[in-house]
Length: 111
Image 1: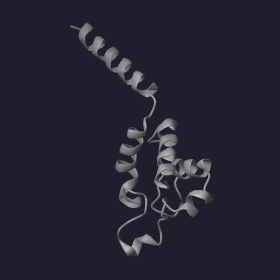
Image 2: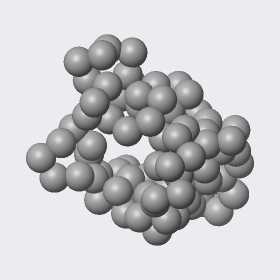
Image 3: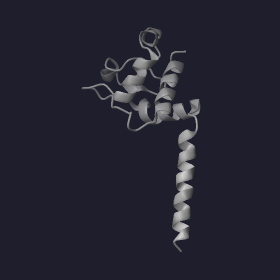
Image 4: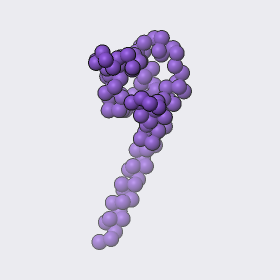
């Protein structure tokens, strides 16, 4: 009887470890964007539809914005958030690969 719970625990651990090593695909990044970012930044990255909030959230599709921000800066903002704003930190919620994938996704918004 005890072997079954131990076996199940081993299977669960093995499957979660395999998933942690899997690369994050562009589709995964798009899903992360939709789940974690689109509420404030919009699905297309242009910002919220609400004009009262639009001046507080950058249009991430803007060529000027894209040019003004390095990948490292974008990574840091996603990972550490922005104090005194609604931009929360995701370092403890996402893996480094997921954070990098979001940076890559944001770069696609400018094209």
